[in-house]
Each structure stands twice: as C-alpha cells, then as structure tokens.
Length: 290
Image 1 (spheres, rainbow, N blue to C red):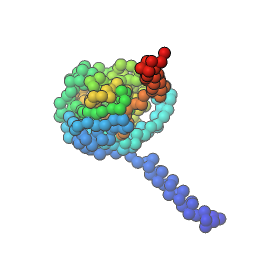
Image 2: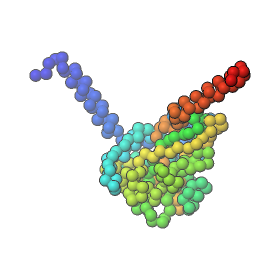
Image 3: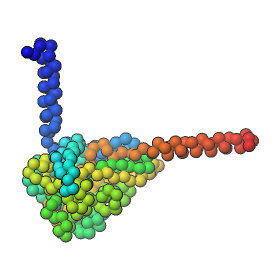
C-alpha cells in the first residue's frame, strides 16, 4: 500500500518521466527565415562578435533555423553504431528548407530557380544552381575559429559515384574552404563521405524510420580556421545544386558553436613567462645590474 507521503513524490516522478518522453519524441522542425541577421545570431559562441549586417544570397524559403535534428539510431558499414541529436541551429538548402522535415520518403527535390556560385562551381567541377550563401563578418578574440557542421543530401545513395555531379558545400573563412573531410584537404560531398568512403564520418543510408527527409547525413564534423584577432574576418556558409536544380541537399550548422578556440594553457604560460623574463632583463640592464 502506498503511503500518503509517497504519493506526491510518485506523481512528480511520473510528471518528469512524461516530460522526458515528450522531449525525446520531439520531431525535427524547421522554421523558415530569409533574415540573415537572425541566422547569424544563432551561430556564434564565445569570443566571436558579428560586425556589420550579414547578407543572404538565396531564393525565398531555402534557409531556416531548426530544432531537434536527430540522426536516429544508426549502424555504420564498419559495424559501429550511434545516435546524435543536435538541439538547434541553422539549415541552408538547395530547395525548400521545410522539405527536410518528416521521416524519409525519398528526399526533397525542389528547383528554387536560383543562380549558382562560382566558388561552389569550382569545388563541384560543374555548373551550379540554387545557391544558398550566408555571409558574415566577425571579430575573434583568438587566432583560431572552431565550428561544427553536417551535410545531408537526397543524392544519397543513388548518385554516389555516379559521375552525375555532386551538390557542393563550402564554409569559406577569409576565402579558404574548411568544410573538408577531417584530416584531409578533400571537400565534403556524397562521393567523399558515404557508406564506403570515409564511412566513420557517415551514419547510414536512410529508411522509412529515419527522422528526416534526406537519403543520408554525415556525423557531426568539426572544422577549424586561422583568423585575425586584429582585423575583421569573413565567413561564408554555402551550398548549391550541381548540374541541375533538382534533388536537394542541406548544410546544417549547430547553434552557438562557431567560437574562438582558446589558446593552449601551456603556450600562454610559456609566453607569459618569456615576457616576464624579458622584462626583468631589461630592468636589470637599465638599473646597471649585471
């Protein structure tokens, strides 16, 4: 028999469990926005300050913010399994961003009727269309910027190594693309990251239970870039269709994660010590002490 003193506690536990189940069950959701300032404000973390007004080059509906991007449980081709959930961030697409929502039903394919981008065409090696490019200027307190990103595409798996042309993505920091396969100089695409190539950075090809409408997605990838601490830097997040305007892809950037990377503590201590020793030596010489 449950005592009257236990009932409130059990009721609280039940409420917490229900709230947790609702949180876990929250679906991936996209809120469309073409406001570059709103997109930029969702991105940056400590040590980074937006300068001026960001710009967005795209067609209406290609961009948005998202909540609860869940990979669902996956098993990679090598046998490793996992699951991740990115709580919030921004999404740039080559079609309509809301087409990413819902379980996998073949992937979105919407021709937005937009123009291409020369930097992305150079990466793809083909003409590009429906480019979605967010440009932001910023100041950094550290000479190193770190950020995470994901690439999802309806081109998985049917167009992998097909020679048809890969939808390119780029994260250009002061003109240099850092959206690369980790540890390499190879741009991320369906050909460079899939179930066979660099599979440790890929999840799996989608099925009807996959909680987003793309044929596959990378794991959360990390990029770093050297930046200036004394001058304004520029970063561009960019994606486009290659060859034609159909079969969409997406670049997702987790919220508040593009941040200045702190200097290593040992290096700071070394530099501080060197400065103190140098200053003391100057003082001794000035005082005539040998």
